Image 1: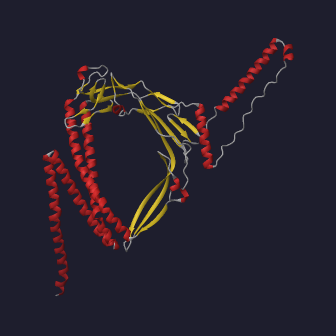
Image 2 (image 1 turned 180 degrees about the vertical axis):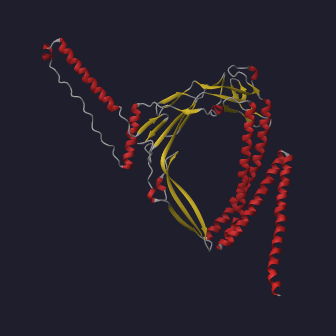
Image 3 (image 1 turned 60 degrees about the vertical axis):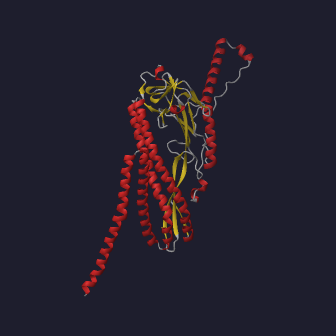
Length: 468
């Protein structure tokens, strides 16, 4: 069930905040302008670097054999990335010969979500209604529930155990006859689950600790199980009596004693190997909880995976028995590793696509930041008019439209100036577009307002003419 909280902010407080936001609005506007300029330069430099690399690289025909003629050359080659390094997770006593070994931990917790709804009141007050809802989710770290707004959910979280995430990488990874650098190694993504074989004693210790935590929080005791009946020990036969027995009788007695001992050991082993109640292992997951298929708050799952040897393609400069980044004439550096077999042209085209997407993503972010900065600068005017919410709403809509238009125009001017600096032809085209928008907004908008005013006067004059 949702929990709501209502707060009221006075008119004076709102006006004070709006004036303080002018400074942050200016800072945001300046930061956005700098971001737009930097982004255009970055994109142009990156594209030029990729064009240069695309015409400079040579194919490495056989990475399994060192070629002195390739020293210092930008190469593109495909080979298996392999390692002889053994990585281990000391906490769980497992290991593997792998490029990487990773442990990821997730906790099943109550999570608080909030949603705000604001309403202006006459007199300039603002009423904020915050609705809090709670759901059970798998999260990457324990959630502190003591700070939840709804008291019904406070202190509802616990964990059966806390375990840190962990990731290890091999230091020595071969690429044919060459060695990969750390940055290239970390680009290998051939991950797969790691089958777990954990020590029985360790699992029992985990189970005991998890049981203690579970019972402390839930107050549920583990169901008592009757101790298995041990086989009765065969009565000891005095040596004086044993001496009177025949050899065959002695052999029968010894055989019976051996069977009795075997049964006792089997029952002890069965008791020791009974199923663990609070710890379960399945494939690459170690699960802390009673029923993995029906998680309870406090359950924890630890996922183990590894990066295995795989075929990769490297594009970098040969540096002895290893590699280094390619340095273009403009100072930009480039090296990459991709999974599978790829040609140099395919890699360059893919990098150009990424560069283009990054360019437009930062453009959009920069434009939105410019608009937000302008709204922060001029937002105080709307706040002052909040005494009458209806009027403030109309004026605020107008301020928003003006800030949006000015923000887009300003962003286009900044982008155009940046392109004038880096690429003059396209920069001139963008300046023309920005000028056209200014003309439409400044002059055509004014003409439209005059036309609307004239139409309104005609409508007001029409009834008077009919009366005469």
